[in-house]
Length: 329
Image (cartoon, rainbow, N blue to C red):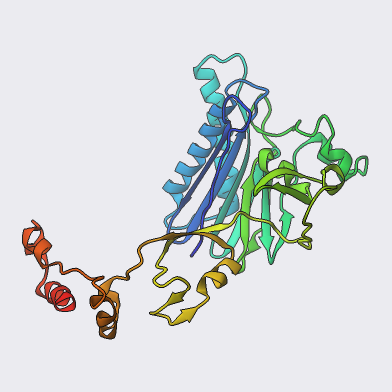
């Protein structure tokens, strides 16, 4: 199973960061979990930490290399995490029980299962479309479902962050489970707290001097003085990717692949920053016909003087020494 993980947590304007995120994986399974401690109660960050730590450790103990039943596993570990928070509050003689939202996703055999309590969400991005896969356990969501509110009214409702299900607290959590979803190549699963999904209903990004200065709905953003307006046609906007290892040998030409314009092609694929790993390729990776190209320009240096002084030279094989010295001589 091949996958890429990206995670980030920002404290914003709060005094403490109450978000906690973790992931764990084996050869055949991947677990992702996020908890958002509830700031209206004491020790929300502790409840979040207990939850993600307990769930991740349970996965590490049971995934050999897969869990037997994904739904049963999620049900058990989320319920046990809830009781672990209660035990902490009892042991510390806390006047109020810490609380946290939770969303956890387990992927194995190409199928994703997830479970959540509260208003932390899971989104799927498939073929450029962003679709929420979870429903908030909030009164505002109930009003939306009953047709008492529309999306615009819900976005500014004073009770939009009030939830009725969480881990911790005086009542057992109402945990909601997904059906198994078969993933296809290129799918992106995003688990996030309300600090992320809050702006996701926005349809406009305002950029000034290369910096994002506003995210919101078009009617609420100041766009009267915009010099350029780009219609993204409902596609997703993401930060530019960073390629941390490139060899720009001769500018926009690569002698090994004999390609011209590769930087433009890479940028069209979403890479906006490159980190050069050196202008001269490794000699051992170059065909013999390249040696004269670099050696005659004084761009190669013999390693023999360094090998003579290096304490580990004796441990190198004859083949390694022969190839290095032959290539550089």
